[in-house]
Image (cartoon, rainbow, N blue to C red; front, side, top):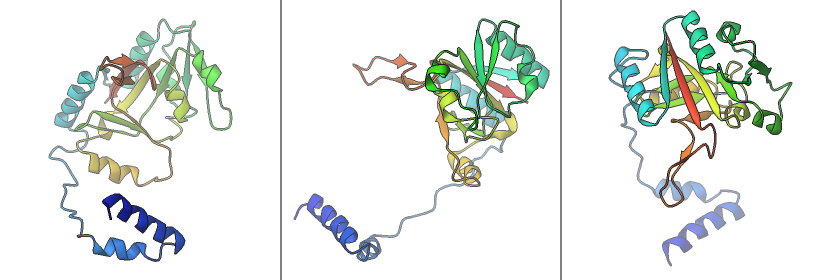
Length: 221
């Protein structure tokens, strides 16, 4: 019997017997070591963790900005979206963040109770959201669908994403992030490591295939 036949036989037995033999198969396996690290050497929000995050984000071709205060953040958002005709925002995004937008930029509101269609989102120039956290070690930003981050659709359809990351929410390692995210396990998560890109076709990098072509990250704090 080949390994494939053995695997399929175990699956078949588990299905036919409502999982009766599945426990036997698991019991035969060697115990899995759980000795991996759960925290990093740099504390959340530390200068070291932020420096690592910025290095990873830049390497991924994201564009990083710093904002010490909400006023700085609003000014940066206004500059980044000065040419945008419209920007979609989630329902609980702080109003101050869009206070410096020009009169020519329309703010499009989206929520689970009042959803913009994919076709409507395709006509929007940009999206502005907060984030749940960022992982310095991997350069990954995570959105978990909270009301200041919104539905996944609004961050996948527009071509430009301006994402705000609070510096105190920057953790060093992935296990730290998973522990935090476990507090709300049913929330839909979006993990972002730079602008959307793929090199599937002839190893040529193409951006904007699965999501925004351009990612601006504003570190607040």
